[in-house]
Image (tube, rainbow, N blue to C red; front, top):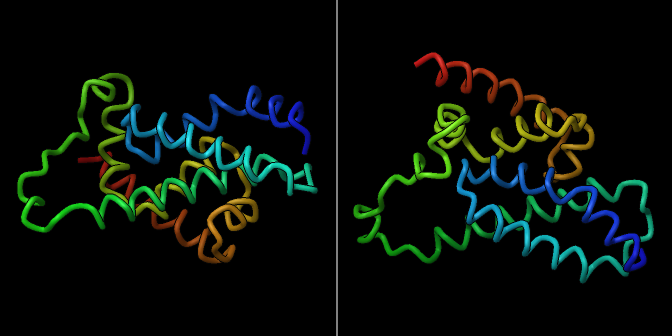
Length: 159
């Protein structure tokens, strides 16, 4: 992939990628922007080795998803257990108080894999096959995550 091709990809996908990460981060815009920037840097550094440009969008989302998962693992590793009782719930921070507050609050209570499957399928129009490639799961696992996620989301939005 050339630099020009990568630039075109970023211009075309940047907003959608940020929305994807914003939803995974349950509305935390700062975290989503940081992760998007980190994912785009990783993608740029790896872009020279990408030969199949037909699946470049899925490749970019896979990098973004893996960056999100790595950041969550790092957060868990960094937080001492005695500080966990002092953690405040930022799920309704100012960025999230508006249009999608209930959705973000419901998504925040879900497992990350279910949340990711729902976001990729319903908000980014990826097929089950494409999602399975992005999250490194089988198609059956993705279908199960979608089914469970829909049920959990429906249940949480009713309350």
